[in-house]
Length: 153
Image 1 (cartoon, rainbow, N blue to C red):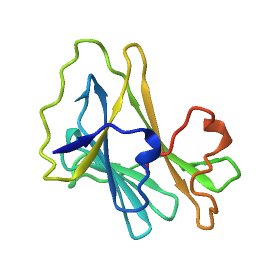
Image 2 (cartoon, helix red, strand yellow):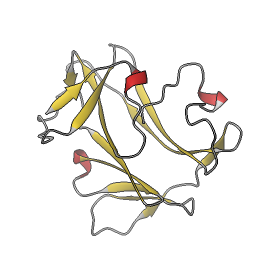
Image 3 (tube, one colour):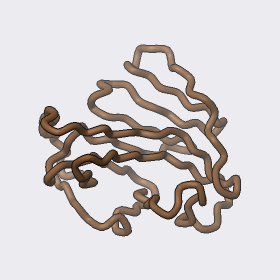
Image 4 (cartoon, rainbow, N blue to C red):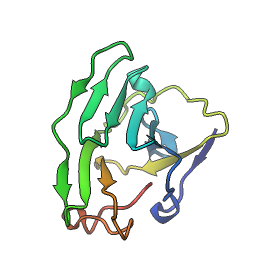
């Protein structure tokens, strides 16, 4: 397993996959979340979901399946953010309590994974934002999330 802790600026990866987890003391505090793009759809999953996943479709619909065989549950439509070129698809909140159980170590088979250190008494909030076609500056985040937001992928 290749787990890296690097400044946020070095995590940016266009296309491909992103695996990320919050950490305490350099140890994953939850299962890793995997994000990837296939065609014009964005997907997210975590091993804690089993075979379930969240999918963001080009139509603007967002679905969640807890198991592959389940019917998809539809989320609310994405929010338009910033200058209207960004869609706020969903938010993940990691509420890490002292002394909580750490997940089993994941076997990533030489795939890169990133840890985000979360100090005690703080919360990690990750938002999946999808830029619409023609978004000129892929690094210009919506003003609603500044100044603290950082680009991961």
